[in-house]
Image (cartoon, rainbow, N blue to C red; front, side):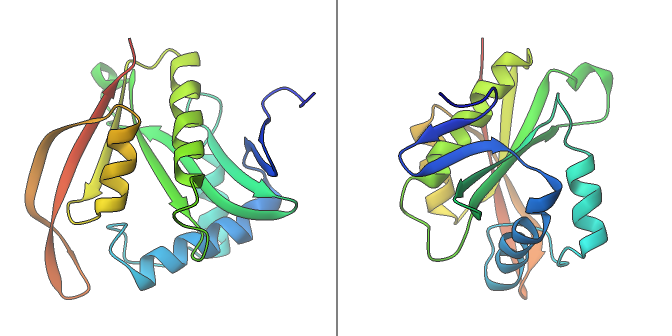
Length: 173
């Protein structure tokens, strides 16, 4: 039987992210920044920035990892959607899968667990802001019940061009 907060799926374990995971999480993140348009961020995460990122992900806004042994294969997190009190029950998800491991269902495992955690913490809605031409992420979110609620036109500039951002939402209750 798995310890509290740990979910096992075959050889993959889902659990809360730990300080020991920071280097591998940052490597997945930095690859996404440099090699793709799956994130609108443009600056790689330094070790200090990675530690600060993890520190911001406490009980109400957890960060989780999917591991096989000691290898982090994917990670995800919930973050506050907006700073204003009216938005306190709305969160934004992020899901990233290590290069070479995409397409194996890891994103679905991570996102499903984030939705479970969001429900357990009493959140009402989960938002996803996705570069509009990132079809894999849009399909992933749609499979798990998210609907497209809008598109921000030409709002993200990365790799020399403007990108639309699709806004997807899952209502939890």
